[in-house]
Length: 148
Image (tube, rainbow, N blue to C red; front, top):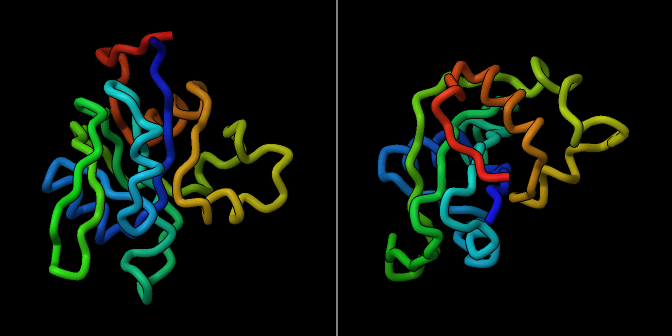
């Protein structure tokens, strides 16, 4: 089975919580986007803002990780909020702005309004785009294994 490469759209503040806890949570805790991701798929977080909902504009890629086992599970954050999560192995990286790589990305070419794409909260990208973003984030991909 080949790897898939995903973008998840989450505020930087929430990304940091996920990185610290070793999990991903997408689309306000919905299960559907997590079920699309399988073991050894890759996830890059894009953060439009520093915090949700009133944070400052950021428009940067803020984390990268690999899906551990591909099993979505619920986690009670409060009695009224029990979102779904998936376990992720995160890699050290630096934030990189969308503007710094936008002209090199296939998913932004011929797409006049990529804001609509980001509003989905989760979408698949091609391996070439993944490599472009990860390289700009300062991650050494030489040791990473990809199944094609």
